[in-house]
Length: 148
Image 1 (cartoon, rainbow, N blue to C red):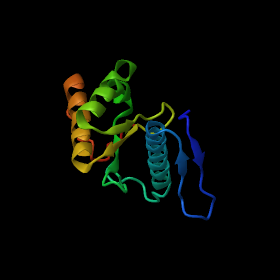
Image 2 (cartoon, one colour):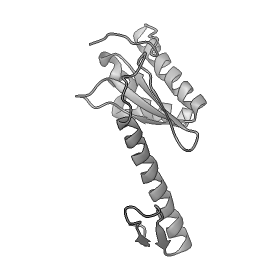
Image 3 (cartoon, rainbow, N blue to C red):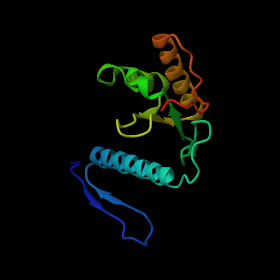
Image 4 (cartoon, rainbow, N blue to C red):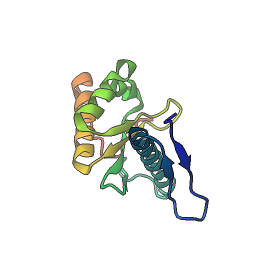
């Protein structure tokens, strides 16, 4: 995929990858490895959350100063927040420099927003404002609402 040779770490040893190849290919492989490491760190962190989210919001700090916040919305507005072909949620991600995981249909209506703390707050506000503008109702998302 990256036109490089990657020597992966052995379990129990220092987690060091040795990447060999052209400079630009190595840089691309490094970005992919770091991205995957971040992804797995977030999965691990979400598994380690023993207590349920208080007020519909829970926080996971990241190594890079980033954090992940769970934003709970009413079931009926998940599609509204995502938008046609994901356009609305993509726009919010781009405007706020965050990464947002959309809830699956069979899961709780919770968006996971990852980014720098101030950007995560902006994304949550954007989601709230979008719902308010489209439904005429302002919903305070950082409180536990019972929309089941």
